[in-house]
Length: 155
Image (cartoon, rainbow, N blue to C red):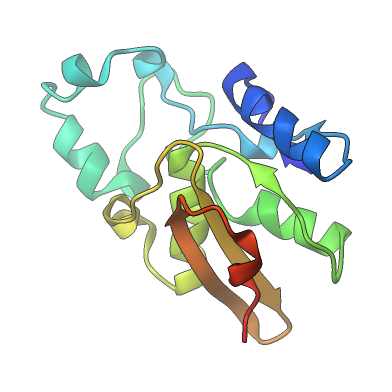
């Protein structure tokens, strides 16, 4: 059981960890993308900037000013999730993160270019499940807000 170290994800992860009797461990690899000078900005304000369209349509090529990493979603790459999967072979790994990193992991699992990841919808508190097999990942669900997680088992 892992979570981004940000408070909002730790708050989401806490009841899940309690329900499955697992300690939630912070993992910096699950953090949101580095938005540089845009960090903390309101979406309605940022959406009016001329750069906004580029961020939405060509995220792999956009570099935020004063960002610690570039391109913008390097942190949101599937690498942290791959490391968690490798560390727990054959086990269920729960990782609580943010919309953009989740969308980037889903895009990678589906073989979709990062520039198309904004076409994927990930709502707050939704479940996205990916089965990692030796033959490659299988996306079981994206943005599920249903209650019965048992239905996620592949048939």
